[in-house]
Image (cartoon, rainbow, N blue to C red; front, side, top):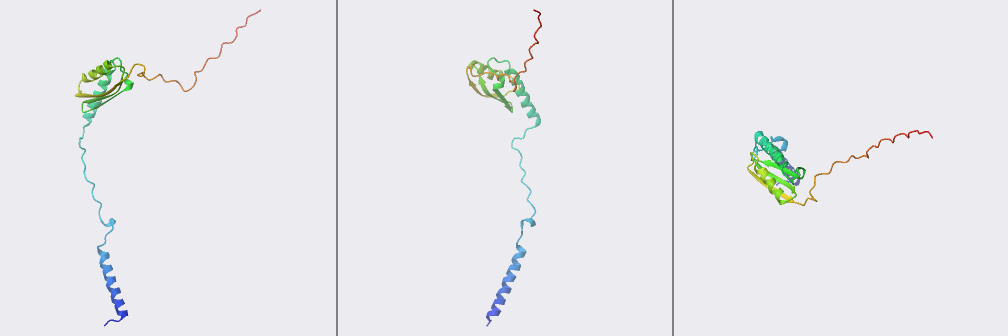
Length: 150
């Protein structure tokens, strides 16, 4: 039989052997090469020519809108994607809103027109007021009094 000291020495040797064996299979993150990121293709890749075409359509629609009475271009947002023009803004009347949409539809290259035009009376739809200077206007000095003999 083994004595208590021999048992302790045997148990220590077994534990040391197990720990030495475990150390060789333990890996840290530094030991693994990094994974390559997955390659992701954009779902609807567009060419620069398509962007340019949409920009030119938006410009032509904006030029057509300038001639529509009752529409203030600064109160209107125009965007184009794949020939679909989106109009958002305000109009003075229903007739002006219909004329706006019709003018956009007649532009070359427009496939369809989506619109969100709010009709507001003339009193509430106004172009932006002119910019006022942040300082008071400089007044010229008054002319010198004229000497008149008595």
